[in-house]
Image 1: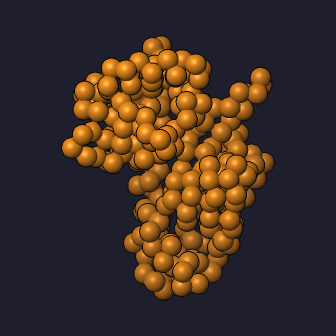
Image 2 (image 1 turned 45 degrees about the vertical axis):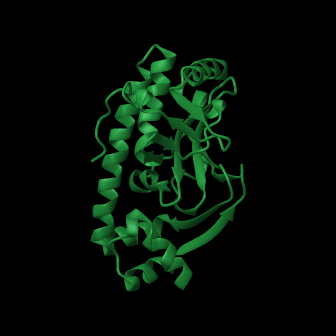
Length: 232
């Protein structure tokens, strides 16, 4: 129980609560570990539970009729998902998969409703986080409106910088494992196109793809990124 409270303290949704309040919340949660590539949440279950990521990362995907995968979102430690369906009771046409071994805290619809009634600070945090996600959605729509593949990828990187960017004197590194296929699935283009664009940027020394699939963006590249709707 004590370890669960320590983990919950680092979750933005619960960060303003006292240890006593966190203890009450923890008692209503079920902790579960999912292995890499394991399905965490099926579409038909999306209005039954909310999941908070205690460690690890996940991707939210939709599969087209011809079997192609589109990545709707990616969530890391501290994020949560499934809350919208608990609020409006509707399922979401998406599946959530673990990108790596991932530990989650699962809360049922009843426990979620009780939490919203008992903890106004959680409601306030939830509204702030949902507003940030709405702004991210606007940025994603802007990205998909670009006809140029290079501009789409630049916009995607600009979006990811807010969550995964680590700044240094030599630029910013996206601390997220990004395969060419992942980038293609998020930007709505083919993997071959992604490879061609990234290879050109590397040749021009605008970016460096590191061994762990993290991508370092050099200052010359950062100066050409499109403007985003602010998350704050």
